Image 1 (cartoon, one colour):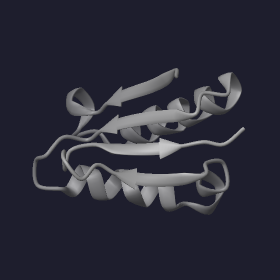
Image 2 (cartoon, helix red, strand yellow; image 1 turned 120 degrees about the vertical axis):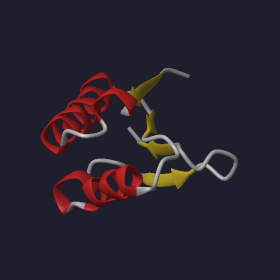
Image 3 (cartoon, rainbow, N blue to C red; image 1 turned 90 degrees about the horizontal axis):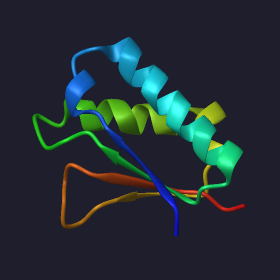
Image 4 (cartoon, one colour; image 1 turned 180 degrees about the horizontal axis):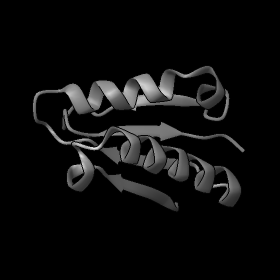
Length: 84
């Protein structure tokens, strides 16, 4: 199964760039009908993961995906599942 991966380690300090990267990866998944996005905010303080989860909770974004999964084994990873 095809999936997209977004690693936020390199842009963790730039809020606007993070938003753009998240919007871009969601748009790509929808356009290409890819069922899974793996977002890697990393393990740090948890602030970046909270930022990602707040973004994914936005109504305009939430309506585009099917469900959200926080990785049990790896705190620094979030999966976004789509249904097409």
